[in-house]
Length: 168
Image: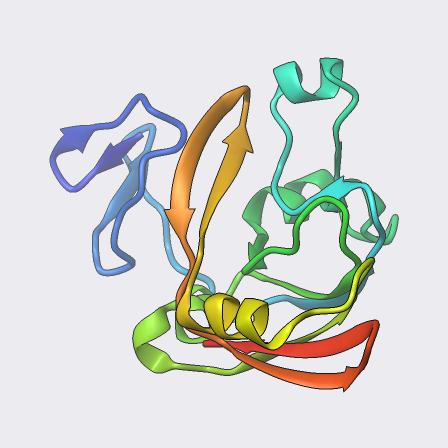
C-alpha cells in the first residue's frame, strides 16, 4: 500500500481522507456511499476489532454481533463511533463515514452524549462535584495501564441509584 509517495507497511497507519491511496500501484477511489448501523451493545464486549491476542484472552468484539448480512469485507471498512466500556451496554453507531465519526467524537465539536448509570452505592454531593470536574482513571489495554483524566461532565441525579451523565 502506498499513501501518496510513501510505502506503508503498518496496518494501523492513520491518514487523511485527502491523501491518495494506491494498492498494487492502482489508485483506490473513494466510495460516495456510506454504511450506518445502529446496534445495542451487550455487556461483555469491546468496542473495537479484536487482535488474536485478545481472542485468546477470551475477549469479545461488538463487531462479532453485527447482523450476518454484514460481510467480513463490510466489517473491515466499518468503525465504531466512540466506545462503551466492556461492562456497559447501550447504543453504538458503526459507519464507513469518517466525517460523521469525527464530528461525533472530536471534543472540539462538543456533541453531548448522555448515559444512564446505575450505581452500586449512592453518590454524595462532594463525589458528584469531583466527577463533574474531571477525575483521573486507569485504562487497561493489552495489559498496559495508562492514566487518563476525564473531561468535565454534567451529572443529573435521578434517584439514589440512577444518574444521567452527559459528556461532550
